Structures are given as C-alpha cells and as structure tokens.
Amino acid sequence: MNGLAMTSDIWNADFDTLHPCFQQLRNRCCWAGLTDWPACECLNQLLPAALCAQSGLPVRFFPQDNTLPFPELYYEERIFQHGMVATRANWHDFFNALMWSVFPQTKVMINALHAADIQQYGKPRTPQRDALTVLDESGVIIVASRRECLQYVMDFAWETLFWQERAAWGQEIACFMIGHATLEKMLTPYVGVTAHALLVEVTPAFFHMPLAQQHAYLDQVVSGQLQQGSLASTACMNPFPLLGVPGWWDNTTPDFYRNTGYFRGKNRERVVQIIAA
Image (cartoon, rainbow, N blue to C red; front, side, top):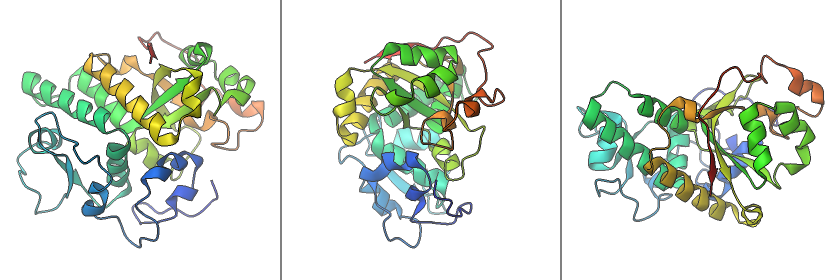
C-alpha cells in the first residue's frame, strides 16, 4: 500500500509493492524487470511440468487472439478438451495464470466440474457453476489453527476477528488469495472490497511451513473438497471483508471495524462448513 499509481491494464512490474497480499506471489515471480506483460511462454514455465486437464492433455496458456484454436468452444470446454487456457495481456488474465501455478490441482478440478456440468445441463449456469465461478474469480481461503477464529468468520463477528484477535493474524489465522479478479481489485483496493471464503482448519504446524508448502497443502485440501461436491452453491462460501485483515489497510483503530456498511452483520443463514484438513 505504498500509493504507487495504478492504471487499468497498463503493465507495472512493481505491482507487487502495491499491497501486502501480493507477497503471497513472491515464489512465482516471473515479472521482475519486465517492461511489458509476460508472454504465455513465460507463464507456462510456472506450471508444474506434468499438469494436465482431466482429459489428460497438458495445460498451457495460449494468447487469446485470432490464432487461438477451436474458436467455437466455450472457455472452459477448450481447457478441458485441449488443455488450452486462453490468456489476454491484462491484469485479470495475468493473475489467473499465476493462480493456475499456485493452485494447479484446484484449477483443474474447477475446470473439470464446469465441463461436467456443461455436458449434463448445457451452457446455462447451474448453482454449482455459479459457485465455482465465484471461488475462481473472488475466492479466498481462510486458514486457522483455532476453530473459534473460523467461527467468528461464520458469525460475522468482525471486530472480534480483526481487532480482539489481532495478534493471531499470521500466527494462527491467515487469508490466502485464490480469486484472480479479487487480486486485480487489490491493485487499487477500496473500502467495500469483499471476497468469498472457504474456511480451513489446520494444525499449528501449518504456520511454520514455507509458503510453497502452504500453497501445495491448501491446493490438495481444496481440490479434494471440490471433488466431493462440497461447493453446490454460492451459499457454501462466507462473505469476507478483505480490508479487515490487519496490515491490509489503514485499520489500526477499532472504529474502522464499526463501519457497518462494510463490516455487515449476518442477515441470513448459509451452509458454510469448516473444512478440517
């Protein structure tokens, strides 16, 4: 949050200094010193070598231009059938590519579930596809080694979670970005920016793992949950006001958390479950 100007879809190799959440991408850095968008060939090098769509074909990024094969296919169908992730030179698709490298098995599972739904129901979105899209675009994973911290999220007890439990952040609870549209929003964050959270309970050892190991662990947990059909609708995720995370905004007084227009109370029941990893 150093105040650097950010213009929509103008490349800035210093974007990772704009907000603390981008430090979660530090072990995927392929942009240092670049004066323009990383090419698909560069982004492909970040993917696991053996990563395949569930059809068995390798996943690769391809420029979304007039050379893109199979123009008759829907975006998710092209990935599933041919392993081709259509990618434009913009922040949205750049962050999508990085999330493919950080959570590869989860992205493969999201794609497979989309493809299965399309095959069964056609292209109109089902409740499951709506939920998969929300996770893919606007999702976060809230991880905690104390279950009550996750319960605070479910109860919308924001002042307790973010202020009274302030010392727990980074030690016993953390927010991991997975939605690429939300990453794009964090280039120019604003009071009101909200994500949709999956809640994962872990052991205290999780917080002593290196970042890459944390990501791999969460990738396995979340992809496994999706495979079990646990994301049947958007009601399975919990709204989460991102700027409440300590250090992610100027939120150093309890008054910040009393803005009920942003830190809203719980107004309906959901079917959110805590994932015991």
